Length: 92
Image (tube, rainbow, N blue to C red):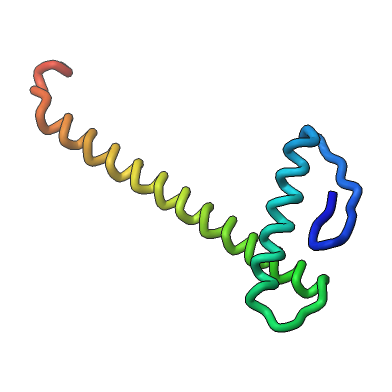
């Protein structure tokens, strides 16, 4: 695989197409970040890219957790509403 002009032998549990997709994604991220910089070394660019990707991962995890909390709140509200609407004699 080639990432930012460097050849790498990458092996993993995924199939070759998936590994190529990962490598292409990292390559694209590095190239996009490099466009906005005047000068940098490939190693510094790799670290900045890793930090950007980690940030995106953390933000996605935060949104997922917020989504789960929203679902829990909605479910609790619906359960309260159902409890209020159901005659209590059904449960006795």
